[in-house]
Length: 401
Image (cartoon, rainbow, N blue to C red; front, side):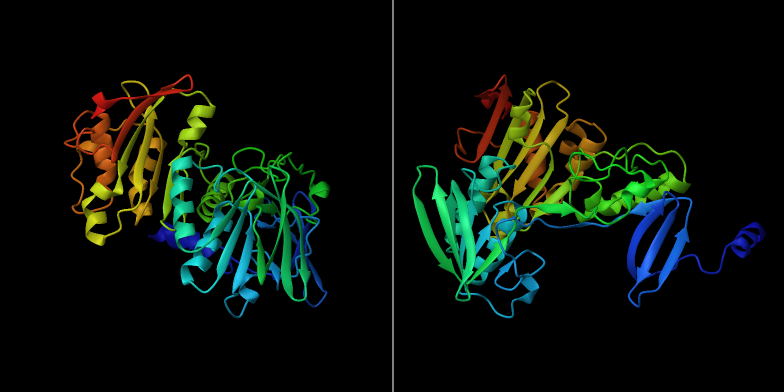
């Protein structure tokens, strides 16, 4: 107790100070802050953490005024629901806003999808359910459409699309949302003065939250291409531990849990099925429909499925998982832990899960892989699926269930 008090007495009274202004590096140990009143302040430190975030990407040929044509930053400027709007970009943010506005039932939503389907980074079965629900809410998806132009005319947005067959079509809506990704904020930071290099992806991450300058660290959107709040928060904690704490093992990005606020909700962790196929990783896939989950039936929310991807061997280590449906996010964390610890599936399958609950669907998927499930494909023909994929060929495995 005495030693603890002595240590406290040696610490400075003010451990944290906040300065509001524009900061830039003078050298690898010094930051200059230009305050709002024009005055400057110079701060020196042993270590520096850069967490300047990102901003929406804006196409060079579109004038974004953040009133009529907006990014996700400008949505807050709208004081009422538009009667119609178009969303450019069918990734997570674009699909989330398309879901939000179409769900209120006050806005006719159009979604421009240059690819053959929305959410191109996700598995087709996930994207298909999201698309069907968007269309059920009255949204229209422009598939395989390239934007030729978008401009404000007489207070409205006129845009022209060109389809793969060469035909063109012109539409007029009240508002437009540009959602084509984000750009790391690395400009005007004085990086060159500190010797920091920007990598080909446009960010300053070099190795496990460190830049190429050993005492300068980074966290959040400016550090990697995984622009998620939970990733940025974890990176910041890790960077500070590396600065002052004991040696720790590097961060792993293999088990990042994500939620897409769509209709229905989508939760994911680890690799997708299409990623495993693209990398030619032999794997097994098991799918269980929401319509045979007791909690989903009780809530009358039976649209969706559980999908778990494991290695095609006796260990059956989990490579990834996708859940789409009500309370999907409640089902992924235990699986994320198994991926993080590189474990198999037997312990989780044998645990007593709460009943009725959505995570019971995870347990039943694992039981199917272990050949312990009471559900049989010849009874639930369209509700259960098990197959093995190797060398680009997927073969049903009814023996798994």
